[in-house]
Image 1 (cartoon, rainbow, N blue to C red):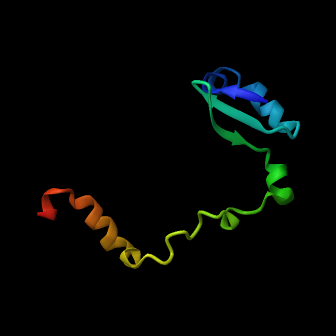
Image 2 (cartoon, one colour):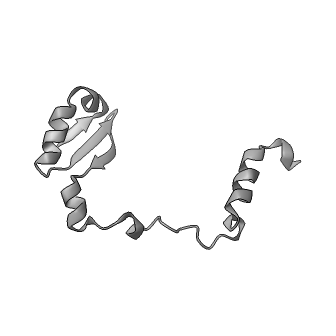
Length: 83
């Protein structure tokens, strides 16, 4: 099924019905694909877990992010402290 962001608001019952029928729903915003909703049954049947996604752990080897609290503090300082 294809649905727009407006459909999410106005036709949620139809979208949920499509998910109940084991159908994925592609969400569009201004004509561009923004995401896909999958029924839980499809995810449980072998789509894998989030831990298997290639983006998980992609910055694991970055030395500047070893101390997360320090890294976030440095990000929040802003440009005025860089001088």
